[in-house]
Amino acid sequence: MKKICILGAGSWGTALSILLAGNGHQVSVWSIDPEEVLMLNDYREQRDKLPGVIVPSSIEFTTNMQSAIDGAEIVVCAVPSPFVRSTMKSASEYIVGGTIVVDVAKGIEEHTDKTMTTIIEEECPQARVGILSGPSHAEEVGRRIPTTIVAGSKERAVAETIQDVFMNDVFRVYTSPDVIGIELGGSLKNVIALAAGMVDGLGFGDNTKAALMTRGIAEMSRLVIAMGGHMETLAGLSGIGDLIVTCTSKHSRNRNAGYLMGQGKTYQEAMDEVKMVVEGVYSAKSALALGKKYNVSLPIVEAVNEVLFDGADAREVSMKLLMRDRTAESENLQWNE
Image 1 (cartoon, rainbow, N blue to C red):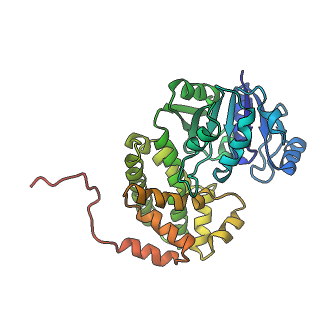
Image 2 (cartoon, helix red, strand yellow; image 1 turned 90 degrees about the horizontal axis):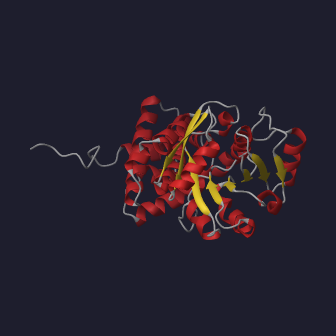
Image 3 (cartoon, rainbow, N blue to C red; image 1 turned 60 degrees about the vertical axis):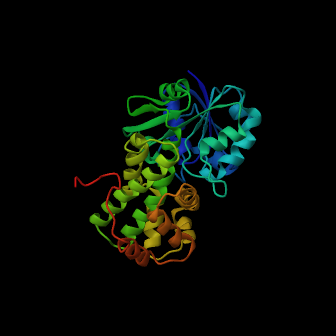
């Protein structure tokens, strides 16, 4: 049994707390919101974001970060990606050297274009950092619906510790050393999912969505490889796997926000209606900036940015994507002539 602290009591933090407590670990959960902590302690249910899922009485919820972290061997960072830096800056004071910090937020930081593990390493240099990512909606993990995911770290021992702590009969965990591939896969698929939602909102069909997802994974792969990641990762759980579930699931906040934008709402109106942080909105600008930095073509990401921030019409942007100059599907394949 390990003592584990989860930073963030939203849907994902709550679902993971239930999973870890079920695995026999001592779990404490910190939230910045006193009303959220009161709700979870009184009702043992995340009524706003994970209704109907009962939280075991053994899990402690608190607004006191120091008491939540004190003695923890593993700290899980489960706050939305825009708040990872500020949260880890505060948490670093209480995290002792050698503690494993597991990032489960998916995103790229605006203005710096840095990944979440990079931010954690900067703010908490004494920690050993890992990541947990893949096709895993909290609504299903909290209900013990079979899920498979990947644990990544630069250190094999850290990835294997995460695997051992989280894995059970309905939550299978693989390991990987490709941290940048895992992180970019988990971040970029949110941007593609916004586009997939727009496709649905515009009333297009399965052909269109399949094309968008396929070309989306091509864009993701180009950038991941340019930044030192591996194609095997994009062909796995944190690439194609996460892309499929985020582009198609009723639980996907990115797909749902895109759907509303496809119907004519602004991104702010869409986020207000979804009532959760839509991380693809925050990653879109950074993804485009990384594409320019590494000289990688990302037409779908560019189109999403036009709709989000330039006031472009989703239907017109879709037509512009279809009418781009002719090209080969894969530049690496050559004719035998």
